Image (cartoon, rainbow, N blue to C red):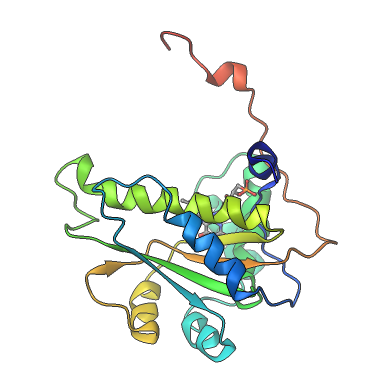
Length: 208
Ligand SMILES: Cc1cc2nc3c(=O)[nH]c(=O)nc-3n(C[C@H](O)[C@H](O)[C@H](O)COP(=O)(O)O)c2cc1C
């Protein structure tokens, strides 16, 4: 698949077929993750690929399995989500947070070695390691698309990252930016409508 085609067809998928992904495909995708730019030239990243359903169940048992209509409405109000397309995106995504990972063929946990307090950086360069691993995460999404698979992601909330550490055994100096679910997209699910951007209004030649 050509690069622009992968970029244009990549989308977040939260509904998967029950279909395993061959290990060599996962290895190829992670190899591409390591081709991302890196701030300190070290690429001190690890990726845990969880395929054992028993480990997946333990890893995810802390994630809420759904949300009531009232709580969903309260979330939309609390977050001041006034745009109707944005509201629909959240209404689609929030109830699927558990299943989109549980039903994935694999859950990938990216890990970066974080030397400073990520939540209280002294300056913006202390966030460079975090920024770098997100470049690698985009490589994963695009290469998954090129391989005929799709991904979703969840930012760990509350104790979810510490729970993941205890289930998966990664060391204390490694930080987990997100959960990634990867699998074969269900064919009968319509894509979630996204806000259309007029590129001409967002590109500024020479000055804003
Ligand atoms: C930094 C970041 C955090 C995100 N957090 C979540 C999340 O916690 N749960 C989720 O289902 N999707 C999450 N997403 C995915 C977005 O919902 C999704 O990318 C967005 O709706 C655009 O849709 P698309 O990826 O299909 O283009 C996140 C994406 C990014 C880049």
